[in-house]
Amino acid sequence: MAESVAETASESAAKRLVVLVSGSGTNLQALLDAIAETGPAYGAEVVAVGADRDGIEGLARAERAGLPTFVCRVKDYDSRESWDAALTEAVAAYEPDLVVSAGFMKIVGKEFLARFGGRFVNTHPALLPSFPGAHGVRDALAYGAKVTGCTVHFVDDGVDTGPIIAQGVVEVRDEDDESALHERIKEVERRLLVEVVGRLARNGYRIEGRKVVIQ
Ligand code: GRF
Image 1 (spheres, rainbow, N blue to C red):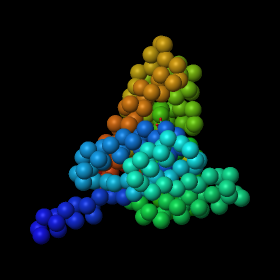
Image 2: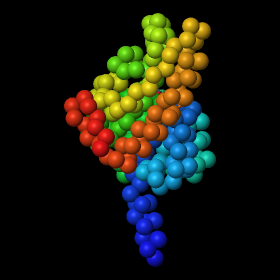
Image 3: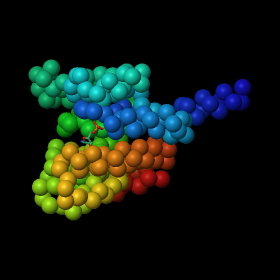
Image 4: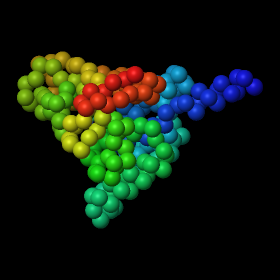
């Protein structure tokens, strides 16, 4: 009896994650693998995966893991605002503690941020505030940067401008093209995302201006 009470308590303590994807979903997979390997001690569970498009490997990964999925495509709505409202409702239906944008290639709107601001985490493949936007890897390479990396941050109403939670550094090699560099960044990014989401979930945090303090 005591055992089952303890188990229930630790299970109910797991923070609920909704993960949003647009592509191959290797960051999502890293979270799923960490949760499967670590069990309740990880402190969070993925309760649903959402996307802005069909037919992507990220959704297939979620389905293979037996997770509910949903798709909100901008083109199915008559305005960006109604898409944003629908995405907000779809995510809210799973009552997440944290929403993780793991390669979700859409800027969310006012309603989404009103609901999930301060608990919406994004991972970006560059060292912000350098090289924000959709081509962070290409832009760092074109600029001639010698180091780049990845940034896990909270999302605000700008493009990749929210408070930084953690960063990982990757050296640029002379022979790098965008794809080789992005692959090396993603190796660091997956580890960083898993570490950061786990710490946020287990320890709690507060956002003080631009500073994120994990308790
Ligand atoms: C990541 O590098 C993310 O930062 C960027 O797109 C990539 C997504 O990779 N926005 P995956 O879909 O998790 O494999």
